Length: 312
Image 1 (cartoon, rainbow, N blue to C red):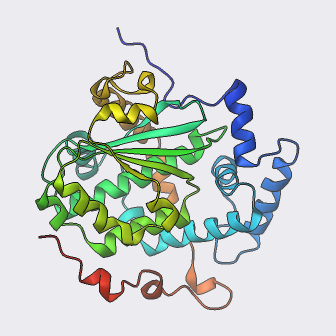
Image 2 (image 1 turned 45 degrees about the vertical axis):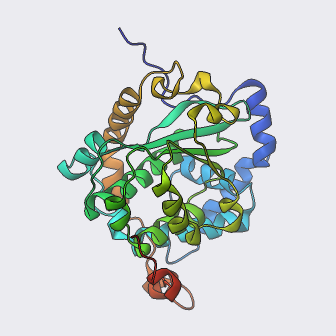
């Protein structure tokens, strides 16, 4: 009989204290900051009048309690919900399309534990060498759905995120289907619209094609994030950054398997099915934005150098 572990272990003890310092969180004033953000939200005619406290607190933490940064991220978050229906519409995790991708094409579960410095680790890998263009978009949609679940489930916040990308099945046919426009939209979501503190990106099981993939994505990344990409020829090199004892069995650790973790997250997404449905109407209304409405063409404009990217 398998022992069911907590899906996302919350920081406690010394890690909790360290995380509070990392997030610039004062437990004596955070409720006041939350009230300020809720009042601001009510006064924005183009944004929803209210939203759940849990996600709003996660945005505050992800903004290091800078109220202005939190406001910018929330505005961009609800703007992207309206601007990117390919990511934020039809988010039924039980639909055949999403279920097929999540079950048999890709895996991307956040790990339950935390690193000693309070960071959450997510491992992403393909389990099928071929994805259609639509399946690539659905993969990115599912990644953002997991991100939305974490807005609520990260009840105490984390000191940052570490992503491990297993490139074992990454091949030329997949790269050829990557759209610069789609990747740019996704990167704007991650970097500008979600309260993610991206600390490290580790790429394992590399091959010559991986360098081309990294070069494809780099133009869409902020400079500070480009410097946080590490490529490892041996998975054991990863242990210098992520403790081996918190990794799944496939990566030399003792903690469950990727299949089991993926199944747990599948169940969690199903729990949020009604929430995802209700959220489709909660987005920015550009017709009511004070001043100049957001121009999506300008927001997602891809300059000539991006257009000319080609995968041989």
